[in-house]
Image (cartoon, rainbow, N blue to C red):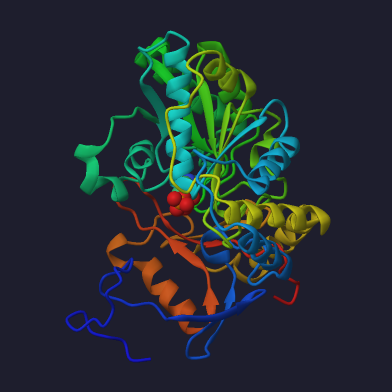
Length: 432
Ligand code: PLP
């Protein structure tokens, strides 16, 4: 296909890159996507960690068709629908503890906005209107809408919009590869991070704080960075000590991507609110969700009786039917076990193939959320010059080779290093 010039762009669609039109997708099935010209791509990143069941899964498509034939849309101010009720029940039953309440929206950013507002309203209805501050982490991403962008710590994304964003105190991410000092034990490193969080809580004034927001396993901004052991146990106990809520962003790492349905399960602790997207609908429909613990919803139910929020497409029947089918297939086909097993195999193979490469600094991740960090110098861990835009070149090269991977990075205002994210569908075979 001829690439159009910027001056004579034939598309009226505003693309992510205004100077470059991506290939036009044709058909897709399983692990393979074809463009309209017939070129074949292996989907090794599930798009952006979305397509956990691969493409054109027959059971998900059948569930969507059945729902469309019955009812394609019903506004939630007038009706609830069976698909949304069943999905909420499934998510609540599968979640640990009293994460029993589910709010359905259309994607990850919307879900993050929902969680922020739910947390704020919980305190308003508790008579604690003075609480207005969220604490977040540097090198994090929680979405592109203004509330979610304000919370996120990706300076490059935030910069043009900074005057529109609420101010948020930020603490260090849990990022051993870059931040654990030589000779420092993992325990000491973790304790130092928690100490910084506690200091920030105390300095901000605990009675002013609504909650602490963090991705359980950091996705796009850092490249599949899992927490150190005990980090989130420490977060939980600080949140309990100071009476603030813990909001776990599992948009990328949730819904089985790390080998358990929720990544926080591996930490042995329970957040107050869990934010979901991506793998929930596995790309078949736009859908996100917030899971909330019972005392939060009870407070609103016993108080004003309404959550002051809502979207036209919330609880969409076809999106809910697709997500429900995705969850049923994951459970029936024991795909969580497959994620753990295949993730370990893929990491081992990557280490064998790339572990000694002079520009591969780290290969990490959990389950099928894997990051390969690229560095200019392995010993100093010095990243490449961001002006090189290595990630953009890498993505183009991979696409030219028929491979979908998700490179991100550059060192721009504290966002360190280039990495390539791999997040293949759970149905990937060893041959894939
Ligand atoms: N939170 C995390 C951790 C994400 O990775 C993303 C998207 O990449 C979002 C939130 C925003 O989700 P969406 O792009 O569906 O709005």
